[in-house]
Amino acid sequence: MNPVSRTALALMICLPCLGGAAAGQSQQKLSLQGSGAVLFATQSDPSFTSSTRLGYEAQLRYTVSRFSMGAGYQRSTVFKFPNGESIALSLGFVEPRLVLTAGSGVAAYVAGRLGLGTLTCTETCNAGGTNITYGGGGGLLFKLNKRLSADLGGQFFQVSGKLSSGYAMVRAGLGIGL
Image (cartoon, rainbow, N blue to C red; front, side, top):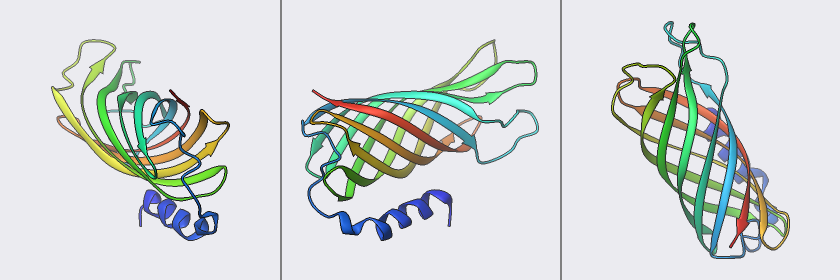
């Protein structure tokens, strides 16, 4: 069982006592969310260094009760060469999210992600054209006030294309209801 599956299973087992409405999500139908992310390559390649990478994302979310749909932009460094050059993943994505269980201030969710984008280089390189990304994960939403929530989540995603690879991502972010 991969780490994302174990995390989702642990959330489903440990949090059912919270019950109630999806209070961790924004109480407004529309919200903006911004997150910082740390990525870990799940495969090693001798041509690239595989240390931890950083990234960010921003998304607009539409929420209906326990379900929400996000659309956004992600930019993450995914490869670093020994000469200092790096390749970043730049993509647009959609992210459906379902709250599994919620209490008055915290909610556990599962999410999927499908994206389309390109690999961009710090120097000239032949990183390929359009790449499809897909994956899923889960996390916890913490209600901070009526309009503001914190999101701590994890996800595994695969990049398909000329430089195919998989990544585990841990993110922390803030969402604000509009």
